[in-house]
Image (cartoon, rainbow, N blue to C red; front, side, top):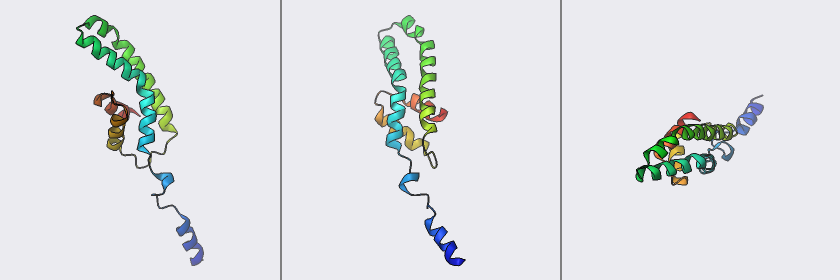
Length: 115
């Protein structure tokens, strides 16, 4: 009986195996792919703002909200398929900002918070 217990204990995963590790690089790449429409719209809005085209920029606000909702939907769908045990949100945000050069920090914060 004791031998059987030792066998099952030895076969049990310690939680640190490769299968249980969070792949921040891969997750950030997929979330970055999801975020591209929102990032491009953000860049466009910043360009309009710098050109002092405030009315054109304001016209994009409602589109920006709808676009970000789609980004979150894509991100949530992807995260549903991932192992999130032990997910470090700060590490994910840092990797997301590293992978998505044009993503504003505030967008990364909001994405990670809402997924």
